[in-house]
Length: 130
Image 1 (cartoon, helix red, strand yellow):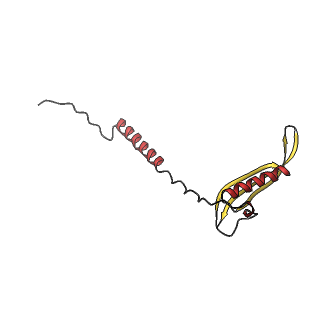
Image 2 (cartoon, one colour; image 1 turned 30 degrees about the vertical axis):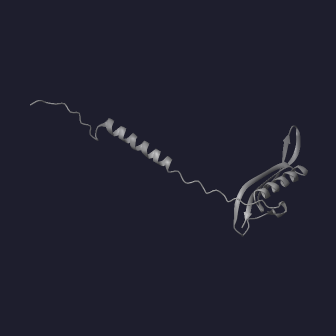
């Protein structure tokens, strides 16, 4: 009777269990990466409204709304700020937003190019009230 050499790899062999563990971990990481959450559905598109129809609200409305964008205005207090606010209202109207909800309004001193000025930063949510 001849003896043959057979190499048997069992689960207890250290090299086999290590490579199997690496393969299982790799598969788990790939599966976790592929199972990313669904992106949110796109926001509805609304037709433009007249600029005069855009209301400024100081609080959240009680009616339902869709948030279209966030607008941050940062400008020197006075004519520069009012011009930027007018531009923001025009942008909101062109996107179908019929209201701008005040989120934050801060006034602070700023030093630019060696001169001091008063700067106003205002953050609005542009929304479409339903």
